[in-house]
Length: 354
Image 1 (cartoon, one colour):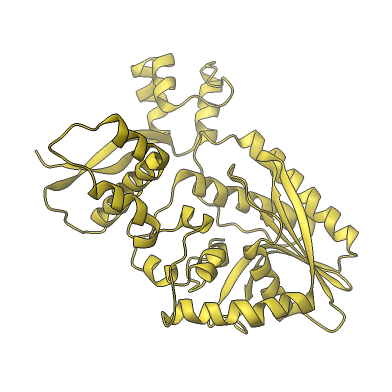
Image 2 (cartoon, one colour):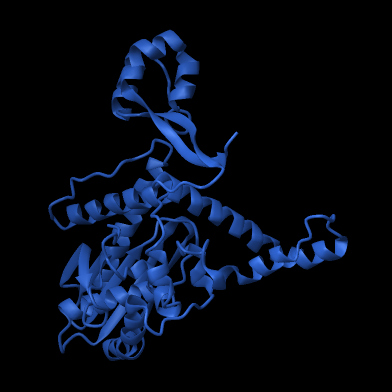
C-alpha cells in the first residue's frame, strides 16, 4: 500500500536524507499519479493476496481499479514468481513467520516515520525484507535506502538479541532485476543513529537543511520549482537573445544540456497543470479537457455477452470498446455492450486562452 500519510515515506528516503530541503519543498507540490503507478498498486494487491492464500491468511478484498490494457497474464505469471521467491527465501533463512504488506514504524530514528513493507520474513537469527517492484525503470539493489528504512522498522518491531542480520531484496521481474544485500543489525542501527536520525530531523524541521542535486532528483515532486536542480537550465535560458537567431555556436553551447531543458519544460508544465486542477489560476492560461476514452465496467460480462453472440473479442487481449464497436457495428454495440462501458474524462491540459 502507498505510504500516502507518512511524513517521511521510505520510498523517498534517499532523496530526503541526501537533499534534506526537498521534503518541505515537496510538501508544497500537488500529488499526481500515473497509470504506471496504478498498475504497480494493482500488481502489489495481486501479489499480497497470493501470499496470503499460500499462508491461509485472510485476503485483502479492497481490489484497486484495474485498466483493461494491462497484461493480466503477465501480471499473473510474475506475481506467481514473486510468491515463489518469498517462499524460497523463507526456506533459506528458516523463516518462522512471513508477513505480507505490513506497516512498520521507524520512529525511534525518524519522528512519526512509518511505511508499508511488501514482505517481512522473520527467521531464527535473520530478518528478510522483500520489496516487489513492478515497474520497468531499474531500481538499485545494493545499499538501497528504502529497503534499509523498512529493515529499521522491522528491527524496531521484531528485533531481539537473537536477530543479528538483515537481508534486503529487490524483486523486479519485468526487467529481471532481482537481488539481495545483507547487513548486520549492528551496522544498520549505527547507520540510522549517525546518518538517518540527524538528517531526518533537519528535513522535517527545515533547520540546517540543504539542497543537494543527485540521481534522487529524478522523481522529486518539486523538481519543477527547485532552483538547485534547475540552476544551469535557468542560467542558459537567460542568455538567449530573443531578437537574434541562434548561431551554431550558441546551439553547440546548449546541446549538452538540451535534455535537461526539455525535462524542465515538461515538469514545469506538469506542475502548473496539477496546480490548475487544484484551483490555481494562471494568467492567460486555461484548462482544457483531454480526450476522453471508454473503458469497461465489467469485462467478464462483456466476454460472456460476446460468447453468446459468437463474437471473438480477443486478439492478444480483449478488444477496446472502440475496436469492439467497429467490429460488431454501432447498433449491436449500443444494444448489447454499452451497459458495460463507461466514458472516462481525459487528462486536463493547460493551454493558452484564445
